[in-house]
Image (cartoon, rainbow, N blue to C red; front, side):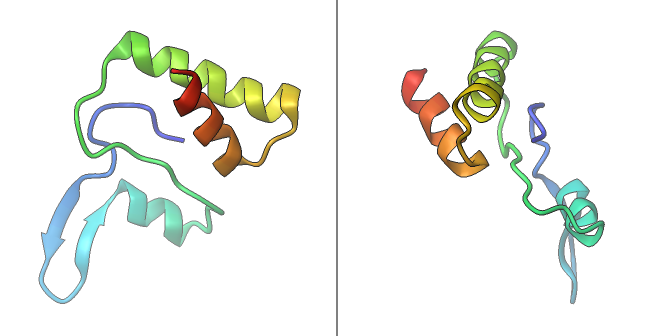
Length: 74
């Protein structure tokens, strides 16, 4: 989970597509990657991340379900 601004952006390379941090993480065999394509508010992001990890650690939800629950709670 990359919770900073525009972490999903990269450089368009002809014949390769979008090259950026996300691609590097996928090449490193990350099971899943969540990034942002826009600017994010620091306080709101902090609250979302807190809710996200709480849902995983205390509720036993999968990352996808935890993210959805955190989004709904926000």
